[in-house]
Image (cartoon, rainbow, N blue to C red; front, top):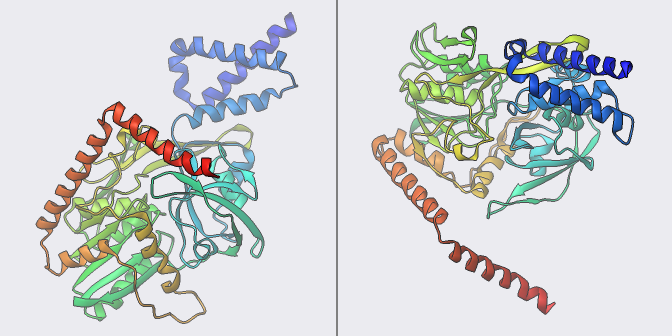
Length: 469
């Protein structure tokens, strides 16, 4: 009996220690949480004493800690010693990969954007694909970093990736397996060209360490060619470095203008980012293109230029990923990545979207001034063109004819060249949005009997061919 009590106290001490390490303020709420902690200790002790197989107390506590952190949001994470070590070494840049920007969405490892010219892009993987298996290993419930590590490997090695893709009905179905050969990923981040009517076009792949330099060179070249206005395309751009976003936004904004600010529970997490020097292009008319694949740094730039009146935004509501994570070392070599603040646009709009609350699907992200809903298949055709046009080091810059219809780009150019006014485009966009909303509400309030009849009709039509077989 004595040893059992000692075991119980040891477990309680361990739990309090770990919770105290993760959340120093937990002790302040000890009175309210004591009952729940006691229940947790009871469960842990009962499992340890009665589970059909032997258990490891440290592993059980680690699992509990992961559960606590995972309950917070999709970006906070408890890092065991191995994961924490890998995170610290993640800047090494000498790994082989398949070339995908990934994010955890609705509990699935989701492709934000395959990088043009990479194995994933060439194989036909698309933004929005959900990765289900890596080399036949089920990654459901696996932390994002662990899934990414499975896809990495030495250049030249192969990996099989199984994904599901949304069909025309909005349902996910498993596609063919993608058998990819890993490469060292060193993608170009900028592609630009001159459009008719002296409209410069610049496509930015992501915000990496040399994005600002590449953008500056591209803009300078376009200016030499007589650029009078600019289309800055951030579609499928998953973000990257905050410094890159700030530096690129500074190219267009006047001194002392707000770019973005962060706010958390603690006052010290409030931080403002403002311009500090004269812009290189203070008066250049700008259209900014975004879609559901635009995230993080892309949203910061979009929000800054939109709120300061320096650009109008065309496309679809952005992804809504703009939170600040702090990585803290813990005892035993472990670490904690914890969301401590969120990003807000200059006018105070919260960029971060609440993915877990489906009723807030129309909140967060950057809502374009001119919203255009483009079918996923058509958007994919536009995106896939970049596989042929993005410059590859060591190869000549290719000449490519753009054949895919791009209504978002076309609309932006129409506004920039005065073929349609921004006010008229906004009014048309608002009218179409109201129409979509009305159709959605009508569908949601459809009588249950009508829905049952439709479902029965669908079942019969599906069952008949089977009966004939």
